[in-house]
Length: 86
Length: 230
Image 1 (tube, rainbow over the protein chains, first blue to last red):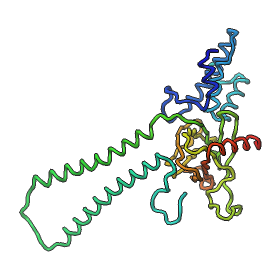
Image 2 (cartoon, one colour; image 1 turned 180 degrees about the vertical axis):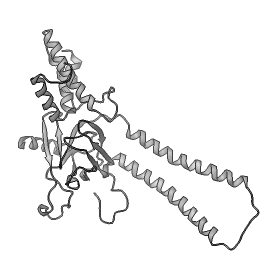
Image 3 (tube, rainbow over the protein chains, first blue to last red; image 1 turned 135 degrees about the vertical axis):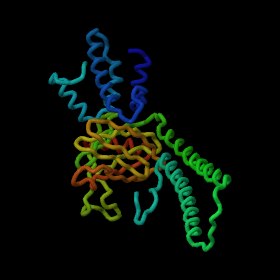
């Protein structure tokens, strides 16, 4: 994993400002990072690479998303009924 | 928090609220001056025995009472826009807290590092200790480090609620399925009270919010204890 990504994760305080989501409604910010984490995991493990860089998305969605939403989506992924494309 | 016979805002607990307070004083002063002037003129016009039937127009006074109001409006608009953009500044939060509205309590989640979550119910009136405030106290307070920028994400698990703390100048609707972001900085340590601000059923008036701003070390100790108790 590159040094900058590792340093960013090590010095993580809270989710930084994301210019893609500058407004009050942060719903998409939470959902996007959740999707990106699972897509990153899927893509890197398919190539046989270390999934450690995906930890950034994990930290951000853990910060942004309510625990009940994450639990529901995790259950849906397990059941195969998750609406997002991973 | 509010006190009996209160007329104005609560004392500001954040820099943004201070600005809003001063702007309100500025705008209200202008309004009072104009209203006093108009009231005086009305009384003077109505109570005079003099009459004048022959003035048809006057260029000078027309110019004055067109330009002067325009200038006054600009004097109100400039600080207003300044505060509007100030409130919209990109801030770099140190901590993110989620406030979830339920019927009829708030739950707070601190998930930057560990999964800390707890419910915050109002203390019933019969269980209050002497000196505590009726309908405002909660069993668990939302503890935050003082003078740190905090991001709050507000949502709801059932119906509409609204998370409001007047002394910080914050109010944000809690909408199910939506995550609304607001931010604040507490200027001083202390307890800051608020109440649910969107009708949400029978106990809408009985789900208050308490923010406890403490130094960082105390916040760290508190979060460690809360995690152990969970």
